Amino acid sequence: MTRLASYPNALLSGWRLSGGAVQQPNLWYRFMRRVFQVTMVALWKIRVFNRHFEPPCGGAVYISNHQSFLDPMLSSLALRRPMNYMARDTLFRFPIFKQGIESLNAFPVRRGTADLTALKEAMRRLKAGAQVVVFAEGTRTSDARIGPMLPGVAILAQRAAAWTVPVLIDGAFEAWPRTSSLPLPGSIVVQYGRPISQEQARAMTAEELVESVRRRLIEIQTDVRRRVGRPALRYD
Image (cartoon, rainbow, N blue to C red; front, side, top):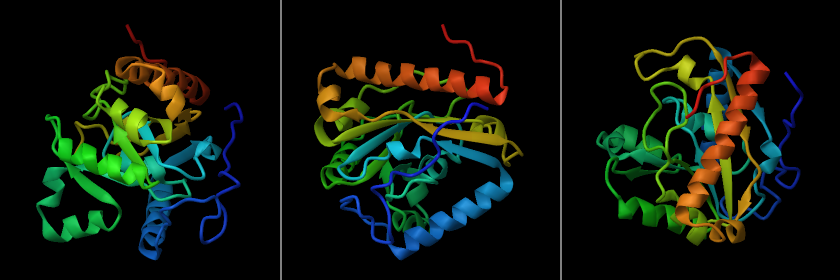
């Protein structure tokens, strides 16, 4: 594999992040992140690249492809700042589980609808300087390819986030496809793209922005699969 950068942003150092980040990871979040790191690395070969693209401060929306149940953990596993997650509303029906995921910064979203409440909550957190990950395809892939993205996520990038960061996850589909009830052994790569500033995002229409992010993710996916020896995926 060609060597790529795999180090954190030097501005985000120390127990209390020194880069000016508003939302600091609390002790519980740090503990659970370490649990996920140890568990997931024990089960899969995981490599993360371009961690230094994590913005040291300001609201940041991470637009990721969606390959498996593992994606929320993978998208932030190696980042220094805490992440906020949109999670489908059905996960909040069970009190104990609801309490657990809310303690890790998750909030509900109704799938298959234009959930304005979830959108407003994401915007509120971004404007407060937090990081939020969204899976813009709206559902997990059925063939590892990156599907069309919902243009509504552009609102977060253009109106609320100081930065938009593309996130490519590859190998998670093979590690836990939607057709399998249990995870399988495998190799997973997470690679971050160069952040897009709010000024750059506003210079595009919503459709142009999400298509630009999608094209960038496809380019990264093609390069990743070439480097790890996986066959390239065909896109029309």
